[in-house]
Image (cartoon, rainbow, N blue to C red; front, side):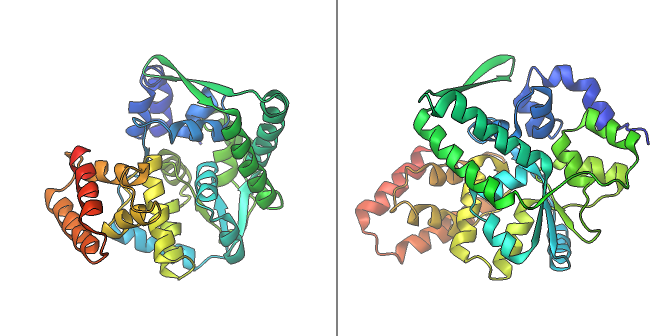
Amino acid sequence: MVFVGITGWFLSEFPVYNKNIANAINSNNLSISIYSKLTDKKICETWSWIINQKDILINFQQFSKNELALHLRMIDKTNTLVLDPLSIYLLSELNLIELLKNIFEIRIPHYILDELMDEISFNYNNHINIKQNKSLLFSNNGEICYHEISYEDLRKNITKIEVLKNQIQDNVIGISANYDNNLIEKLKSILHIGSVQTFLNTSCASSIIVCDEFIIRKVFKFEMNIDSINSYSLIHYLKLKGRISNEQFYRCLYKMVAFGYEVIPFTCHVILQSLLDFDWNPNNIYFRTLIQKLKNPNSSHYEVKRIFNQFWELLKIRNLGNDKINEIIKVIKEI
């Protein structure tokens, strides 16, 4: 099999992308996992950096209601989910891994376990044991960006990583022996090993792959006719089946929007939840990010007006008092 089209175009254009990483990722011309591979960074480090960058988005790519319905039917027919590296870190951040393990057989690319163990060991030896902050360097738009992590935040992050390691360590999979070695080596030379293990996995044929990188999903669909879904479809499924409450669903959505996940549909209830969870403080990052998204010039004027009107009606029945409502309105106007 000769890889042309998407992958060939990516490889020929990468020198340009290296000068403008934000535009490359935002336009789906560069995947986060491939960027991680090319910069020799762990995916967990790259994902953590990207969700803290306002100018870099994780784009699921717009999909129709019909495609969402197809994803939901696919999930309903399987007992096994194979999670790619980005979906693992997102679902862990949303505290959904244990829940998913109780519903499905979960399979994880072996790369992730290796990465987590290395991350734990490295940070204990080089930062936590000596109480030292951690600095990461990334290139964006030709500039070197510093991502500083304090010792206190690093300890919290490593604790979460240790929890995730314990959750997944018995669920790892490798690459199936059913695939040609030349094909595997070709893929590994182009894509991240975590992606290759995800899509060419040893799990059962009826398993569903969850992948949050549009370009990776596209490569495997076009080149090998392997289908996959994204995390939003999975979270939507959990809500429809009553596995998570509406409040939990809204919480997942406002966090995803704040992390930079694009094309996440949200309603007035998601905005309201971002206030409820922070004692009606409109200056929290989640509420502000949702309002910023709504006020984006590319947003539909009719849709924005409809959501704001519904949000206003929800506020009025909460008996918040004029001072708090005026504070919320002031913040909305300032954004």
